[in-house]
Image 1: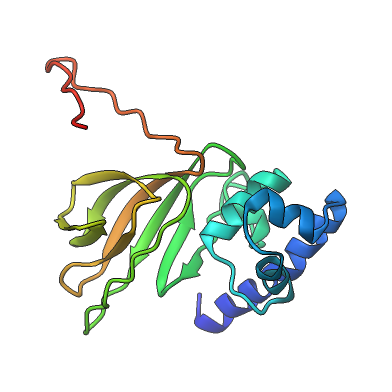
Image 2 (image 1 turned 120 degrees about the vertical axis):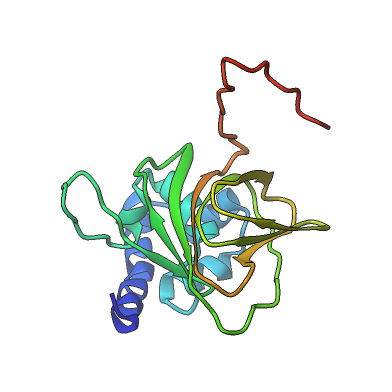
Length: 201
């Protein structure tokens, strides 16, 4: 998909969100209070003056009880039950791998190769995140920690901590992400041959 197609898809998100809200009989003021964001932010999102982001789209999908890919107008691909519609944000690509409007959401995240490394710009938002590096070397800035994760390594953290993801060496990085809005954590089964280890803290 080229950039012009991506822009066309993103431009259609605002009108779709406005139609959903009106169909549900929800005012901007009521929606802003439910989400904990400003009314002007939602108004700009619906009018197309603010680009859609995962932090805004995920709670909206839950409130409207629709899959995330329905919000971005994902067309069917292959199996009609599965819709993989990329969402671009901060120069990175997110491919939704799950359709549930609530609970934990799964994404494949692709960080493109860059000749010049980006300066970390940590963000915070509600939720809990678990990630697994598929390829490349991931740089994870988490609070005061600056970590490099090679393929096969995983990390989990509360997204209320300032965090940033990028390439550690300028190369492309692919990873899987599980994200829960209400602090839903991934449940990892331990190896039955090894005793479980207590978490620190």
